[in-house]
Length: 246
Image (cartoon, rainbow, N blue to C red; front, side):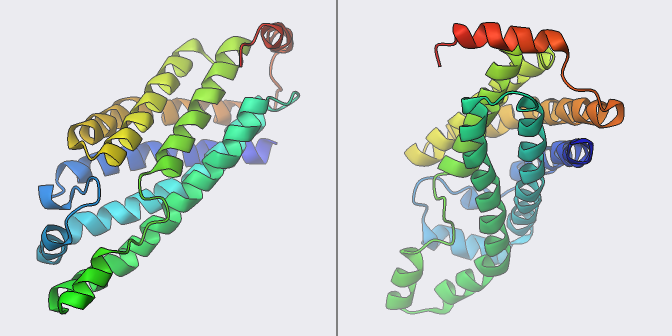
């Protein structure tokens, strides 16, 4: 497991940097490119062609986050499941892996095809525009997996580690905050309320940067020490499982 912990440690700390990059890029993203709800192709595509830099940079940054996130889920879930299966961590971990993978896939597709689609829409006739406007590149339009499932996994891991004492309480509180930010992003995209998206992005930056940095440091410590969770954690986990309402 030491190799997995070491990989997860570096990927987690690099993910903290992607949160910084995404937060800064989103602030400079033109308002016409901050799509909520179904969006408006007549506004989005001309604005994208006018200045695609920030939108394409955001695609590459979120693709990197998705690829790094896969390793973080495997490492952190592996630590939590070191010597005892936890149903919440196992089940939510599968969906979190899918969420990070689909985030990477959607972002890479966006980086490759957003500008050509915009050109086709601007140069196309009414039928071409209708066809382009009716289709989307994403497989996860409202972020249910990329943000919702990942947020639920963070919450599940946080609940498990706070009950068992495997990780510091402060890390758990940051995890709960980050999970709440992810949920706000899903609600914002689903309802078309941009203010919720902005708040979700802000919470993601404020909580995500220290959370992933701290997780990386904890995984790095484990990879160096090679020590399993303390024996007391097993007893705590067993005691909590008897009274666990989940």
